[in-house]
Image (tube, rainbow, N blue to C red; front, side):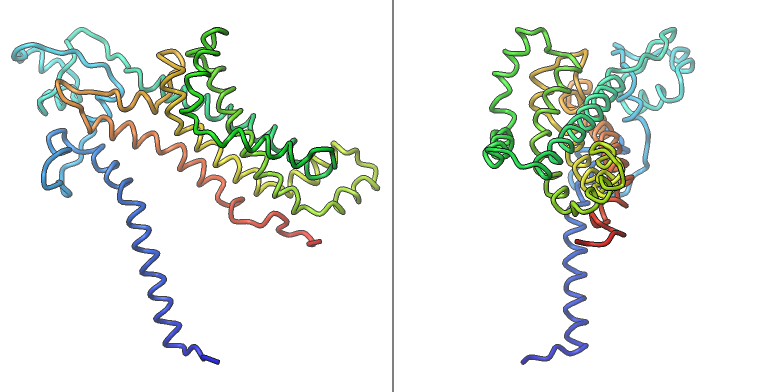
Length: 318
């Protein structure tokens, strides 16, 4: 039998740590590149070789959140002096400046960002809530054709969204649900529901039935035992399901592009449409993308404690 020495373990640990660092750098490099581009001057966004050290500026975010007005010819010094500092900074960088006398008008990005929040949060809540109840029913009660029903639920995720986008658009147009929040919420909830059911069923199966039986003996109803016994034990599964459902709804592009136009359009199809004066302004796109990453990071970070715990943590295992 081979004996692993302490020096051999150290070498193995160092190799593992090095591999983890390399993988981490590979995954974080695109995020760093987006974040750095969001603070670059426009002329440095596409410079070759890439510029790593630069003076950060907030003009990409100003251009992202405000409407621009194209000026022709040189700007009068009095007009320049009367403009806000952020407009002067944009003009100094070779960009456009708002006319004096015009109030600062917000761009469509805040509205698109809010649409994403409304649709993602609502659809995630509905999918997780219905998926948890459905999974509990499949886990605790035996029914005819259970395996067939579970397979049918799973089959709704076998086709990529882009395949059914056109039929769904034609259906939504008949019912007048295109470019509405409700239409996207129903669509995202339906696509996330099958994933939520299958994921939550695995967690429900791990919760010993004896807990509920003891609660029923103590006088609890089935509904009371579900809310007071099962749900606290299934917190980890609910958190994991919510994270994945939220990420899908937050990042979804195909349905949002085809089903919406202005009123209910979300951020993913809006961000690539941002263009500058004549050429695509990559700094504005990077700024919008960087801000778009923040809610997912916050949501995942907020649930990190539940994601790291076992389903029956602190309880007597079966």
